[in-house]
View 1: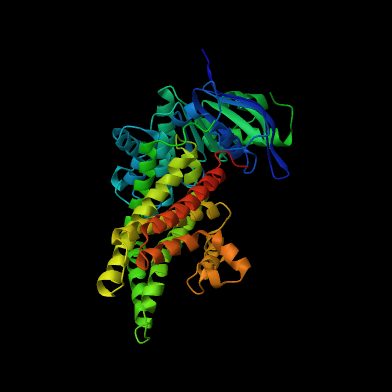
View 2 (view 1 turned 180 degrees about the horizontal axis):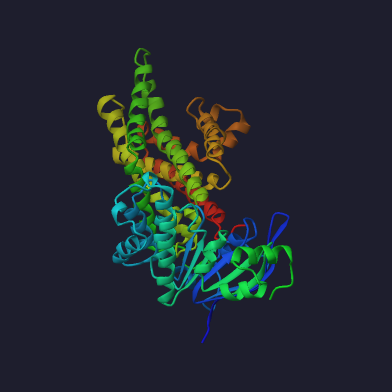
Length: 239
Length: 250
């Protein structure tokens, strides 16, 4: 009963002169999926396609059976950009209350989202006074509003200390246990071990797809970082 | 394809959020409310030793200009910030109609302009002896229309700026010519034909006409006609602004 939450087929995205995605195809199902690859490989562009923020040249992207970006999806996807997309001059609670009203979500969910990212003690603090990690968690909390079926998180753990990173990964797994699909991008390979499934990406293409074990086994590498280097440098001999 | 263009709940959420942001910024709020009063007083003082009713002639124009200029600046910078911080992109992936965003800003800054004008008019009429022939409350209506126009144009130009520096430069580019040609310095009929024709298609001319009419001749119908023209410009700018808000960007 593996049902695909995301189905992308032959998606082409051109930005300026460059083909950022030269025809990518992939599926994402429930669970925590890691989208890994070096900076500039097209992770963010792919994620923007899924939330309907990216202009695409050709190909299809479907989320939960609907065309990506179509109106019914707008309450069902939580999206976190790399920059903390919250208002600096509002408090954490005010930010969440605002986005909750836009989403038409019950006020009670604001408290749940704040608690989920561990910002209870900072809820009345203005975002500009928070540390970088706290700001990105405030931004993450917004994406949790409305219990979305798909969470698209663009490098949510960048710049966080190990304890926070562990807590956030635990949170991603709790969300996935509830039945949602969580797509997390990262260029930090050691986070790969925490995913149910990995998509390794390079120059706009998926170069490996499978559980961390499968990816390691197919390359004979001891860890994901080695596996990735193997794939990048010795292209084509992997699954 | 865009879903619904607006939902009252979301429009009001945007307006409420913008007002909360401004309320938090005490310095901006104080400047928005106090600076117009100081400037109008300065104008009055400047003309003090000159015989005639120069204050009655220039005062209304200034009252029309404040809401327009201030809201133009504030809006172009704040929306540019929304575009660059990613909050706009996030909002556009949510069930937010383009009009929710635009009208939300227009409502918030319209209310602010109303407060600003009430103070500036109270100072002008109460303390400085500006002689208003028409109904004073109509001054508020004109001011709000001016503010909405400034907001609408600010939203529009913010789409063409990529930095806050550029956004601020739109002020001399878009606003100063309108101030020069609005009929305050030289009556519009007395300008060279080309400039008169240009001033006929600039919204600020109608904003200033409305104020001057209201203070001087008090032909209420003429005031409303000018207000309608200003509102028409504002709607046009909002429609163009909506066209610059793209859910999908390259």
